[in-house]
View 1: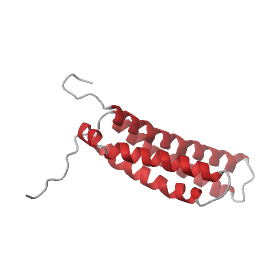
View 2: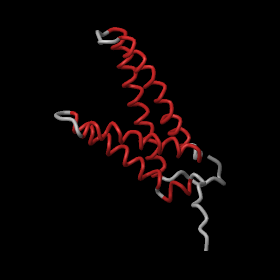
View 3: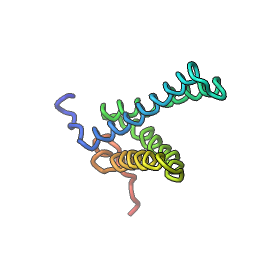
View 4: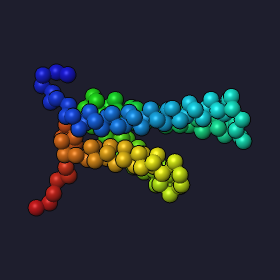
Length: 137
């Protein structure tokens, strides 16, 4: 980081960490599905394998966003926000389930909401060089 550049706020580093966590979770789920499709006995091996490949490919979005956030790239905020919003859908589904899935839904919702709060924080948007829309007087 050069001397003329502002230091990265802790909130932005935390937002990058949350995005990276979501990306790693997607990649891990994808690898699991892919391995189970290849070595396990799923009802549809092709569907399990394709689901695994899809999750691995989708993991690139939050991982790239996390890297962009760490490098103070303004473009990275959009994909990170979208990823956190999309994570609320399976979180809601897990919260409506029963048993051990409910705590998983709570954890996923907490991670997604934490990421959203960190990304819309004024300190974060300022560090990324994102200005508020001009207001008409």
